[in-house]
Image 1 (tube, helix red, strand yellow):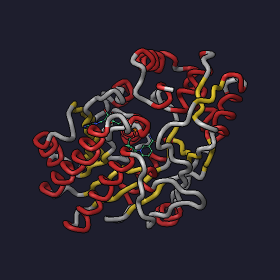
Image 2 (cartoon, rainbow, N blue to C red):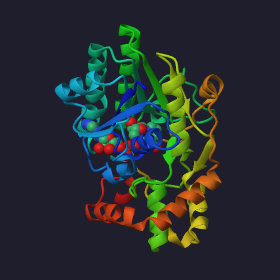
Image 3 (cartoon, protein in one colour):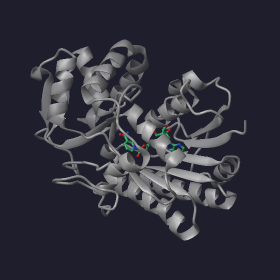
Image 4 (cartoon, rainbow, N blue to C red):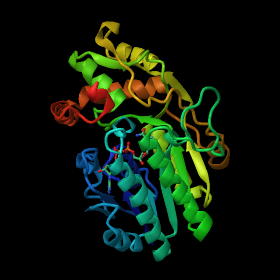
Length: 338
Ligand code: NAD
């Protein structure tokens, strides 16, 4: 069978590695070969690829999406690109804007140029709900204007618009996904849900910003990855697809759920000063992907969070070295810095 050769950028990160494990796992599509291109920044974890390292059709290249020669060579040898690589997180973007511009904007443009030159079949650009800004009421449909607030979100919005511009200007088959906040196993302990879980499991007090009323829209990583696959296999060129699961929670509500799951009480939470540029509320309307591609989230929040707590409880050897490294270094992430 002829293989579809997929280049996955950022495939050693949280979502990219889960996408690769899913593609090459027992329930993955037949006839797919995957090359991961990843620079292995602090956010990468090559252990996340252990399950597929020896899978037929898998290869790994350590490299930078901002290297035009490497990118040109790799893109020319593939049929599709699924582009996850990005410099994150949002909380660090006030400190390191250069990195966001370099990887998120320039790196994406280098990939798009290579795609155009090589006649690549399909380019899936993984964007984010952060690009819309913050919304008081209702949810964003894909047609809403982008009003990003933080430098990170602005860099993601720039790459998102650049990807769509390559479709409009050159006819490249670009499809963009904008997903809400992800949670699940294998997420760095620097991120809010794992940071809370690992802290509570260790008996360490966890920080809550401001009044804890900032709202995020949560989706389990399995559902996000399934949404991306639907877009890759059935989406339309030049279209944007929001991916969400309708799980809005304030950080205070989230903390309450995690305290209960970990058998801890509010004495384990310390309220800290709110951080700069903290968007109040995110909420995506995912009607389009539901109607067009029959997407439906399968993991309800209670089950997803319980499974996630369980995973961290039983995978201390995975997260403890990462957490120690982050705590030692002071961490560049919002939750560690607080
Ligand atoms: P992550 O930080 O866990 O992983 C990013 C990966 O990209 C890392 O492996 C890193 O080494 C790699 N990378 C960074 N710069 C690179 C470069 N210049 N060249 C090659 N590789 C590079 O990120 P994630 O949480 O898995 O997010 C992946 C994508 O999904 C991002 O584009 C992000 O904006 C988007 N997204 C994330 C979420 C979320 O909740 N995490 C939600 C919506 C969208």
